[in-house]
Image 1 (tube, one colour):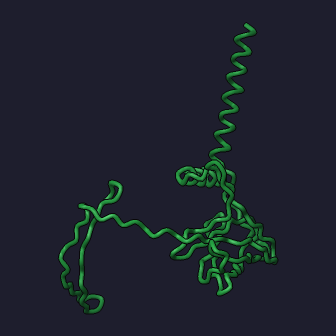
Image 2 (cartoon, helix red, strand yellow):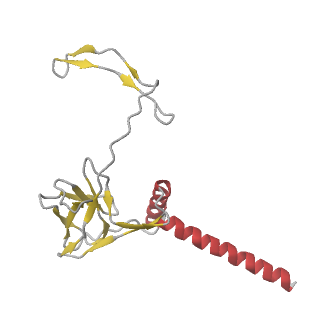
Length: 197
């Protein structure tokens, strides 16, 4: 009887340990499908607990920092943004020296992201063994917070594969009378990629 009880307790502890490790993995996984699932679960839990909270009754603050490329050069015109738990976005563009200042941000914790055409998006995070931790900045009422530097890596050019699925129609002139009269050349094309048309 004692052996069965010990075995049962051992199995329960093993299952609890596996569940704990699984939750840790779900919390920090860099897999995009897991990230989406994690965001939905976090939103639903917050909604059950009274909904996402934003401290709008306090003075807003600001986030400042610099956007660099992989070679250590400042990036001009990168869009830097943060989003509140309610989905409100606060953004700005980096200047010629790569610096940015996002003003009017309600107090709270935010994860910065940046993007620009020709670069991969930047997100301050640390990744190891397929798990990532996002670095958040805390905005305090009426204060400017240094958000840390963001590094945009040069994006690899997209691979264009032209195969038998590409269909290009003849170019034709089309005319319209509304809302204003006009003419344009139209070429219809379709292609298949990874089984989708």
